[in-house]
Structure formats: C-alpha cells, structure tokens
Image 1 (cartoon, one colour):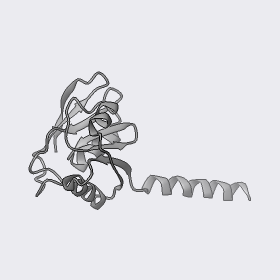
Image 2 (cartoon, rainbow, N blue to C red; image 1 turned 30 degrees about the vertical axis):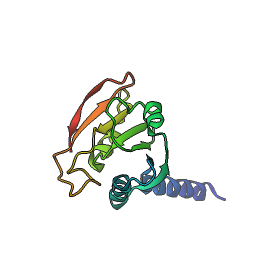
Image 3 (cartoon, rainbow, N blue to C red; image 1 turned 135 degrees about the horizontal axis):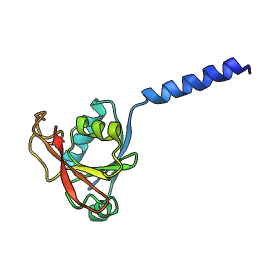
Image 4 (spheres, helix red, strand yellow; image 1 turned 90 degrees about the horizontal axis):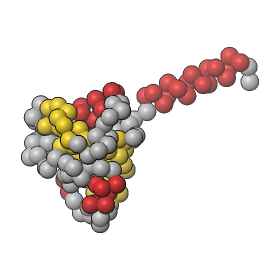
Amino acid sequence: MTRKAIFATALLALSTAAWAAPQATLYKSPGCGCCGEHASYLEKQGWQIKQIESNDMSAIKARYRTDAAPSCHTIIVGQYAVEGHVPAAAIDKLLKQQPKNIKAISAPGMPANSPGMGPYVPGTIEVVAIDANGKVKPWGKF
C-alpha cells in the first residue's frame, strides 16, 4: 500500500469515528419502565444505549459516586456518570467541555417533566454536577 493510500485510510477511519453515535451503558432496576423510556429518548437523539439490569442499584451508585444526588438509573458514558433523567443537552455539554473536576451529573429524584418521565419540557430540568469528593453543585437548567 502506498503512503498516500495509508494516509487516506487513516483519515477515513478518523472521520468515521468522529461521526459515530455516542455510546453509553445504562444500569437500571429490572422492570423499570421510565429508565427504558429515558434510553429510548437518548436513542432518538442519536445515542447507542446498552441497558443492563441490576438488583443492587445502590452499589452501582456508590461505585460511580452518584449517590450524592441519586435518581432511578445510572448511565456511564466515557469517564463520566450520568444519574437519572438528564436531558441530552446536559450530557452533550459534559462531553464537550470534559471538566476535570466533575465526575458525574444528575437530575436528582425523578422530575415529572424530564425525558422519560412524561412530556419533556426543555429548560426546566435542574441538573447538578458531582465532584470526586461527592460535593454537589448546580450545572444548569436544561
């Protein structure tokens, strides 16, 4: 293969990776419908979601340090955890900015107008950030 062909192949691989759908793993309790609805919402936003059922969500939340602002399910995307019914715009902001001092973001509880919990009303969901020490601070309204 020529040097030019190798370069073209490498460039194609990089551009394909850049356009690949974001991938995440969603941990949820068996039979939880709203967690599946949130996964469906993210898939409609272009995400690839792998769902894993767990009978010990407390252990999952402790492992990923989301227990400081818990909700019903935990999503792992890259080096971050996303707790609960967080809108895609907040996750996109997290992945774009890649803050070093943040380990997770959360929509604590189960907000009624969040994605997967009924009609999502953009701009109404309070999202918080969780640092490595478990300290919770505002992240924004999405």
